[in-house]
Amino acid sequence: MARGQGKSYEIDMCSGAILPKLLQFALPLMFSSILQLLFNAADIIVVGRWAGDNSLAAVGSNTSLISLLTNLFIGLSVGANILAARFYGAREEENLRQTVHTAILLSLLGGLLLTVVGIFGAHTILIWMHSPAEVLDLATLYLRIYFLGMPAMMFYNFGAALLRAVGDTRRPLWYLSFAGVVNVILNLFFVIVCHLDVAGVAIATIVSQCVSALLVLRCLTHSGGAIHLELRQLRIYPLRLRQILKVGVPAGLQGILFSLSNTVIQSSINSFGKTVMAGNAAGDNIDTFIYASINAFYQANISFTSQNLGAGRIDRIHPIMLRSTGCAVVVSSILGGLTVLFGPHLLGIYSDSADVIAAGMVHIRMICIPYALCALMDVIVGSIRGMGYAVMPMLVTLIGACGLRLVWIATLFQVPAFHTIQTVYLSYPISWTVTFLAHLVCYCLVLRRLKRRMGAAETTPDVS
Image 1: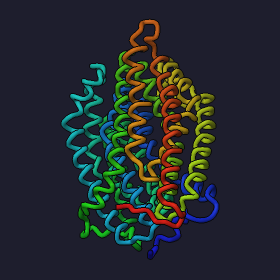
Image 2 (image 1 turned 90 degrees about the vertical axis):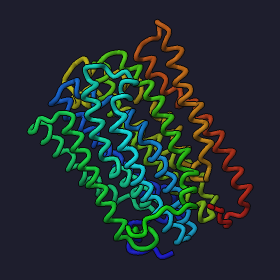
Image 3 (image 1 turned 90 degrees about the horizontal axis):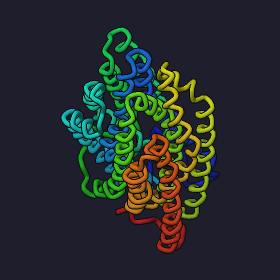
Image 4 (image 1 turned 135 degrees about the horizontal axis):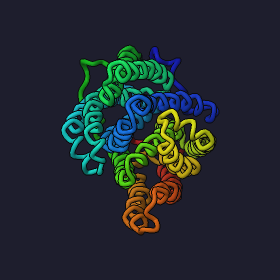
């Protein structure tokens, strides 16, 4: 396959030492994810410091709802990444070209759909989530404006997923760095100077998302080889769409199931009042930076596994899993410990209220210390998906994580003696442990089945 002008940004995932290349791929992706989180963090910090606790609660309480509404299409971007990486590893240029154009058009259509749902459904959904009356109007305004930027957000996510498929994680990092600076500057301007409150931070986020999307668009349209995007050739190729949906829909549904359980948990947290809501919003925003490190190695695992499967290098799949999981556990453990150590100072960035900081520390101690369990649970799924199995991890997640959390809230949490915020938070590490053990069994079965089916390592899999 002609690798084109972008060759210097690509990584050969199918030969040589795995760990150095894994880090070369994952570290820029980790920093990219952190910068993307800074979009929402900047919103929360600015409104918390200059607009008050009601605005902080309004913005922070939307996090789980935004994830709920967007995770299906984020999952579809995972499907595009897996398919593109497999075609790239197998050197099937025309199939890769069709995947690129199908994925980009799908991202734009999905973004438009999310905009409609977000604008017209925001108020009703927030009422279902038991948002307090004093923050309901602010939360609705923020959410409606935020979702106007969904087409740009979806385009960036799909475009970055396609670049990751060929090993390019550096350019998305540069693009998000620039967009992140734009976001912070506009946040400060709209809130402090223009006094636009939550509307200002939402507008700043939209502008920054458009900037990052335009930079990815320029990258894809100027790239050589099959990853090149030609806007006039945008169309849905039915076979490629089915292949993306086959992997992407279960991945997206798994994300929705996680978000659904988190939304139920958010509703339980809302019942403790706006101080706990604000503390949880700040604590949750901090621990998502740890999750970004986990997700970087999960994405690396998917891309490396998919490319090696396409190239017939089945012997490299298990070492890739071990190194991806090991890196995620080490990084999440270190970051979790540092977060607890410096928790009060970090929370002080979001709010100067002693009560809010105290509530945030409860969240941080209960969630961040055992975060390595989340790393184990998440990263191993990348191997299973990279090997082409998408429904299995979705079902395991449905039963092991989401179902367990919902049962936990519906049973133990309803007992007066356990009706505490600590009981709510405890559902996370318990569900992480149970789900990881189930995923580990599935991984062993899938890898054994794949080796048996493919026989010789040189055999190229059928991706149709």
